[in-house]
Image (cartoon, rainbow, N blue to C red; front, side, top):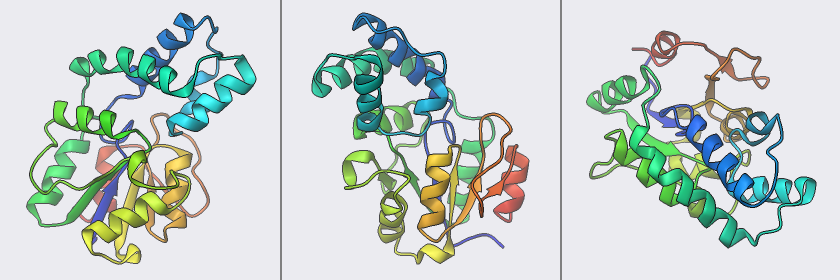
Length: 210
């Protein structure tokens, strides 16, 4: 059965933006004189800007005020959005659900600037589009607040909604919000207990009753 609402993570789930974020982060780190750690991608996947900054400051000696740091990163990131591509199959499923009248929202740990830029590039900016950025909530994922805000915006009970996310951080937030949670990682891996793990858009279609 098709759910009443579907709430999508953005980076890595709807759009293939994680390589762009990593490239921008590496460039900003090198410009600040910090050598990027080998496991950078794994450590920052799905994590909001402030905790990433704290980790880089405390463990790797990043010595730049946060506001200046995030501005530098976005100076590198935003030009890269011209090359941004959707995750294969994701936008098609989003549009199919939209045609069926299923309530949807994008729920991201990225800042509003990035959310709006990414969605505009892949054609998901339209009147009535519901989005939750890190700037819209007190607590980011893995806290349930972002997904609960999406449920409030869509006027649906969280138990009637599905959360789709590619990171452990996001999947844990969906589970904490009391939603059926689909974990769709970039590379095969185990998911958080209670999440439904898939590895293709076709499996996602089946889980959403399409």
